[in-house]
Length: 277
Image (tube, rainbow, N blue to C red; front, side, top):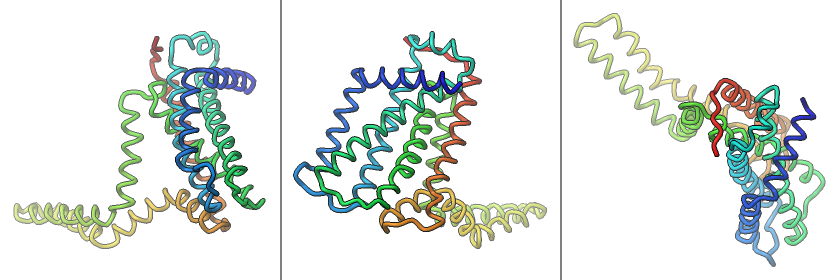
């Protein structure tokens, strides 16, 4: 199985690299370098180097994976697809080739910036980079698979990214949301009280009190736990070192990626696949 995945990954990687799409991606990377790392100027500091190139790698990986999944969804891939005993192997090959292509361009740009810009990287900071970039690129690549027609089934794409948007909204506006929900439940309780539905009044009043009381803190903590790895990576990169707990952040990001990849493979395995011309 591993041999089939590696062989197909090399083929997908090579076909993307020597295609017009691959050339466009390389030009995009060059434009990013010229805009954010102007030639002739020294890179300000190490955290700028890690964060800006990490952000480039994440966005670049999303675009590359989306394009690679689109190419893999074409009818010309039927001969490869039909010979594999499992669709998961095909999906793994698409993911692996996309991450390798995007990370390779990211590392190449990092080497150019390092040599031209004169960024002073210690061995400690240099060893911090691979797990950060690989974990982030892998997670974003799996999200890109969910955005592609190769994996999505029905409303699955809207469900995944809608859930992500809801979590982002809760992270920023949890206090306002819980206050609004508390007022709504209190209004329902008063409405039921006026109409004599005393059996339900107590439930809605308790819910209103919970949202006005500890509910906001509970929801805020739950959402912060989910987004903690991203915050830990950002804080540790700026601080210049990782605490013991923060060192687990890349592993947790890979855990998120594993869960999402399992979901993507389950969707692909159960869908009626129609390849496009």
